[in-house]
Amino acid sequence: MLEDRTTAASSPTTWPTAYPQGYAVVDVETTGLARDDRIISAAVYRLDARGEVEDHWYTLVNPERDPGPVWIHGLTSDVLEGAPLFPDIAEEFAARLADRVLVAHNAVFDWQMIAREYARAEREAPVRQRLCTIALSKELRLPLPNHKLESLAAHFGVVQQRAHHALDDARVLAEAFRPSLRAAAAGGVRLPLHECRPLTEWQDRPAPRIGRQAGSSGYGGYPQGSWRPSRKRPACPYPNPGRYEEGKPLKQGMRVAFSGDTSIDRELLEDRATEAGLHVATSLSRLTSLLVTNDPDSSTSKALKARQYGTPVVDEAAFGQLLRDVAPAGE
Image 1 (tube, rainbow, N blue to C red):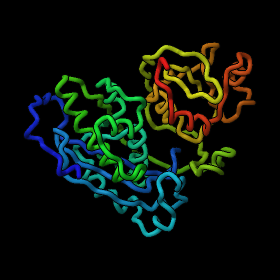
Image 2 (image 1 turned 90 degrees about the horizontal axis):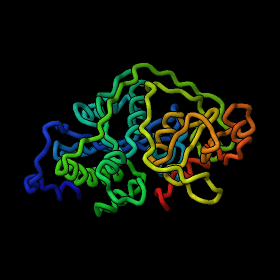
Image 3 (image 1 turned 90 degrees about the vertical axis):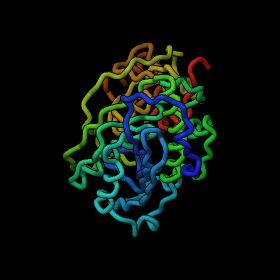
Image 4 (image 1 turned 120 degrees about the vertical axis):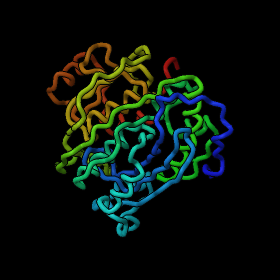
């Protein structure tokens, strides 16, 4: 177990005084990725300033709706039927997050899901900063083949027992975060901390689902909505390798544009693309590698230009599959 391997006193690392004094390593499993999807399980490993485990906690959550992709998380309606509702566990969850930096793999997703659940419960999540372990691995220049949790775990020799189980994913991440934190402290690396602005108002807005995605995945086709302030994205560090070719993987540096309604919150979809090493373009040109749209025959300017330039087009579901295995730049 992780708790048996902690040896804080043995580390000679000098810790920067600017580093946080505590962390909450979090993983949530959800009914899907859209703005109206729900948390169905949550786990928290509380760590001290040096990344040593203090305790851990896990709970199922009844989403009061279809559980979504059971083949991924394994949580059926029968399993979740007797679980507590989110308002019932909100106080205990908050106690484990309070006064700590939220740490997660693709932290913007976990943070958004948590903030929305608290807003539905007419409460405020006690999180003021988050740290994404994908961003930290980039700051540390870890030689990873991709940014999957399993790759980060393998780099540090962490064995995953139950992928997509919130408690085991949080354990794996906590165990991989500790040496990452020590490496950052030893090298004087600035931690990639980001402000978390609580969502204070919420109204569920179910809407018609989008075509075949809803019927096959259960991820839902909800109207686009965002409560996060707009922001300028960092420049993509990789050169554009050219256009996407059907049957081949995406490559880091490819320019990707989005058009029309998406079932996943647009900013979240763009965040996932950026974190995978893709260049998110706000317009479409002859240099664009790929257009993502659920309505390729629409009359939007991007769709029209894509047809004019012969730009490859995929729908959101196909793009989600491609994001799982983005090839490193140069391959």
